Image (spheres, rainbow, N blue to C red):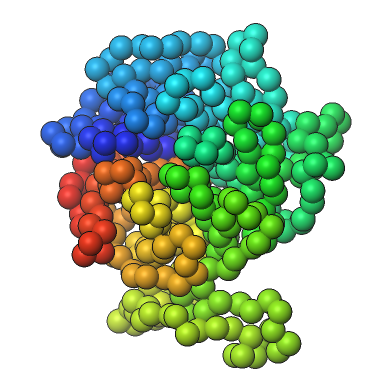
Length: 366
């Protein structure tokens, strides 16, 4: 259900529908079952540490090393996604209604608590939390209706409210615990990733819209190209279906199937995004299509796809469910990608070569 990869690319931690917590040694190509009573949404590897987060079914959260030492242990509400920084000072967790809280115990305080919808049950996905410690920023994303508002005038904590204003893409300052910007433009289920250096935010959604922002200028929204349609020119005077409404100048050939699928489509890629993940520290990232084993490589700040990679369909990667969008994880520093499997509880490990721009399968763990 959820995967985390260590920054050095040596280990992965996973939580499963069966409530198993598994530690994977990616170098030795082995695994170890650490628990059979884990919160299935609680695996998270801490940046630049040999330690990870997980929660048991008694609601105890542990910060635990790969050697088994428990650095911290505390009781918390059942988490539906959580992150912590390297210093372990900033622990941020989401509940099932996508409320966000900082800290735990008597020190716990709300960050976002302004409505009960959208939420985990209604949307069918986890609230995405992407952290960049270099700039002290956090991005959250869940479900968006493309509404634009000013966070300075609309607080993230409001009592007796049904619909949250903060379910879409929001940039937060983890030191002040305040929203920095709301980033509109996506629709329905939305995923987001923050580059390791904190400069770029990339987003993709269920409607096929891909966007990116420079965190130094969040007022400027930039569009990613769709793989066959190009870049939608918002200020163009032409009608929506007019070819002149789209810039196709930077497109590259799209992988094609031998014959159409049941919908008549022969394209193997789809811009309907289920997950986004940075694959190296040079700001390259992967965009994972829903129910597709092909992924697109992009450069942050560049709207055009750079290359397409086939992850293979044996085993099929875990791209077929928004509920499992966090079963895809990367270690940018080590240029490692790990995915779950569509039909079983195993993992597949890939390594990216930024010079050759290749993504090669290294190991399938059962």
